[in-house]
Image (cartoon, rainbow, N blue to C red):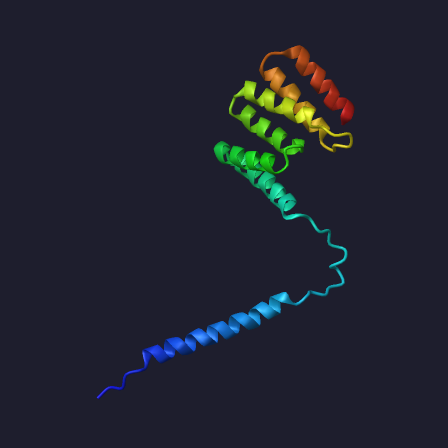
Length: 153
């Protein structure tokens, strides 16, 4: 005759073991981390980190030729920080890659309106405005923006 294992008892015991382990793990994660480098690491709000991830992922998708995915990520970045011109510039470049020059020019002009005084990549914006105008055969505007890009660079 075979002995039956008490299934209810095993389930009951397993539950309490898992519950006890989860409590000890929670206490472990609640402890502060002391590190000599902790004071030197800048603390960013999570939305800032997410914004940068959207930009990096969008650039990756653009380089792979996945324009729809790139545009979705750049729009998400714009919704997080609508005042920052970086996502607008990248979105405009994607539209240029799709030969949608009117939209690209409109988006790049939106980026130009959001430039702040110490913006670090202004020459990239001016270059892409020049390129977009050149592709639209508006050579006067293209020259204007290319000269501005050279002056900044």
